[in-house]
Image (spheres, rainbow, N blue to C red):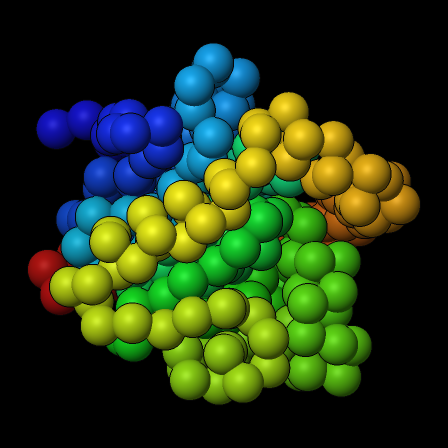
Length: 267
């Protein structure tokens, strides 16, 4: 089964994470290919919008903990920290740049829960629509880390600093209804209606010439683009610094131990 499904219909491209057995979590390879797929579609003549979504009941659970555990098992704690700093985080950030800078409208169709990087990928899109079963959490705090995929900048920009600070500090879930109320998403629909509603939203955003939308997006986001890039660099540097601190390493390793216990028990 392909980890990514890319399709085009009537001028709208779709990139669908297709790892439902892993909660559509991403490895560096998967997230890199996801970003490249969005970028390729956005640069293709005749495509006016791209939809990002997932298979099943989860949009994206962030990092693939199984791969993290495999690295931890093979290379130990230091190897895992190096993997996060030098491989996973740069791959995630490059995909955020592709989503943000795409010259066409990019619509996140949250088919289910979105946590950590999974939430942030949608925040980097032009518009967000969600299934009524979706829930959202900036769960980096469970690893002792700050949001590395732009969430520390994008979330306050969308919902305001107090609400964003609470989400980032607590890692608590926000329901689809609450996400709509605070401006994180634009629409909620029944799960079965999400594909058609996302397509309708994407089509409405392609009303004018694609070249015109690209220029409007570039101009409207000029200052924000510089601020997002600064935030991405700052969050990468902060996490690299944090990953050498004993209390943060302990948080990361505790997640690995919990995963090991769950995997061993077969739960």
